[in-house]
Image 1: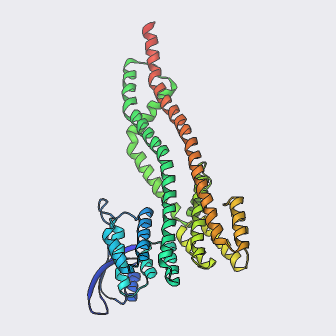
Image 2: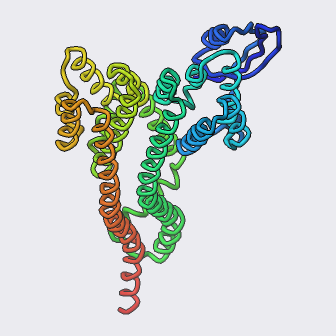
Image 3: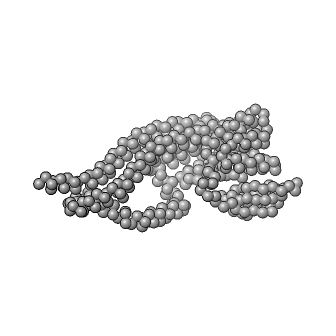
Length: 400
């Protein structure tokens, strides 16, 4: 999606300006025409410099906004006035700008859901669908309250995963910096001394000195090669085949695969439950989930679920075939289908999976930390041994 800045005239002849997101200029002009605006000028907003660029709206920020909006509506404050108050309070530039545009769209006659739908980079299809269902049923404040709870749960889940991975990543980065420093600065000095005094270099030292010299001389070539490989891999992973390969294999990585699978399936069930409980038909729910995830594994699952639903079949048998869900989860969903309480069982299953994520995260950290410590100790130990072995040879000569 691209951002466009526009100048236009509304039906009353008033000149207005603003920004909106669209795939291209033609789509942007079409959106403005649907708003009843006569476009006098439009241009794509260029990328801002790094220190001025707008960061994405965090899930936690969106959850807080949604909760506060639900509370204001519950207090009897009109929607436009509530949005105006929250816009002045919001500190995130992107969310503040988006809310201003949503207010303008509401004043032009768009529904709240349609106004939010104009900003898919902030409000997902799932978010818009819940709002649309709330507007249609006259329960907007209730739907927003439920939506805020879902967003809070998702933000908490992301926080737990990030906090669990923070320590192993930090240890790895610090160790990499330490090894790079020893290899590029310490080892060359020792090797120079050893060569001058004619010390006999053992195999570990020869390997380390050779590696140090290679990196020192050809660092630029290694940098170019690394950047080229990274670019090539990125391009390959953007293809349909590459994305499918990545989505499938991230579920098979030791430690991280199980965590990724449980996180994805928990979120899948939570969104499914929220949509079902909002009164949205199952087929429409699946379409919305497909747009939210954009994951080839989930896309294949949704395609099979659609075929099953179209033929009058159930959801549980398809989930069994996917091998993504535990037997307990499938039994609960199957019972929910039989009792006509699918939404409730999907929600409860998601809660169970979230607790499993907690257990998996703790187990992963408990396993990763000792493993990383052992690996890093071995690497540092090898470097220290390679540095000091020639010293023993020198000391042996002196003693003789």
